[in-house]
Image 1 (cartoon, rainbow, N blue to C red):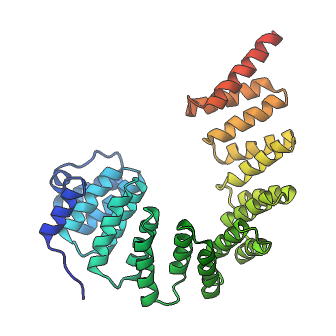
Image 2: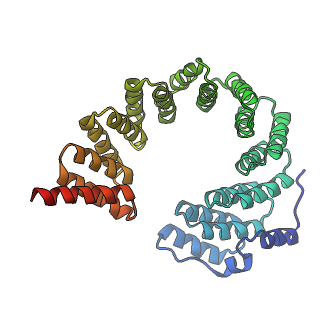
Image 3: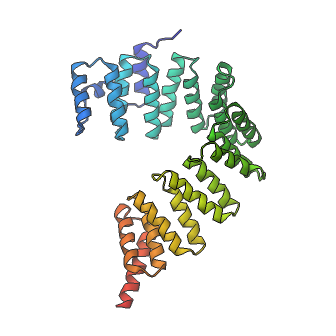
Length: 339
């Protein structure tokens, strides 16, 4: 049975936690050029006690990275309906993305008071406790999850992370192995286990990266993790190939092209590296380091004008980018000397 928090307690908690004042939130609505938000503004003005409308608008603010507005709307929604668990989840997510982990924790603690047997709440609570390095509390939350759901794979994966953060690698490995037995299709568990075993210097680490890729050959994250392992075990050609595969299966995932380019630079394969950095920029036109390294490759190839252009673009996005400043100075000096 739910335990309802009195409205007065919620108001006190919001004030003590340094959160936006609910009274201020009620009277202030951020300006918006978004027709969908403006439509919700009108609906909320007509129905100020509709918590769902406020939660919907909070989601829109959140998607626009307007965290203050999202927080204000979710606080208002909780004042109207303090027992809605999803509002607590959404508010904690905003706090986490806004680098306010302790407020996220307090929000989830309130959710846990409302529904102590809610597995998702306990998992979210444990994850936040790990972020805040409150490992004993995290173990307690995760033990509660395994009591409610003895074969919950997410709980064991978080247990593995908590043990690792707490410095107990052996138990971290054991928990990760438990995950792979409970859910043999969870790629994250195989990746985590491979990383743990590699850190311990155990040769069987590679088979877990292979297993992760075998589960989903088009999982860019799994491919990238395998490529990292290949790089770290000095299988450079295979690492380059696997990095490239990660970006080829997901063109928005340009980290594969970028890492392949870096390895090629280390091998003095400058022309090939240039092509990788070129792919980075074509798939992510605001990739600052992509512009810098394509410029650097151009500089090494003697294409000074192209290098200058890329350095200038990098500096347009990041005016204090020291390497780009140095590169631009170099190529301008070389070009002046040639004249």
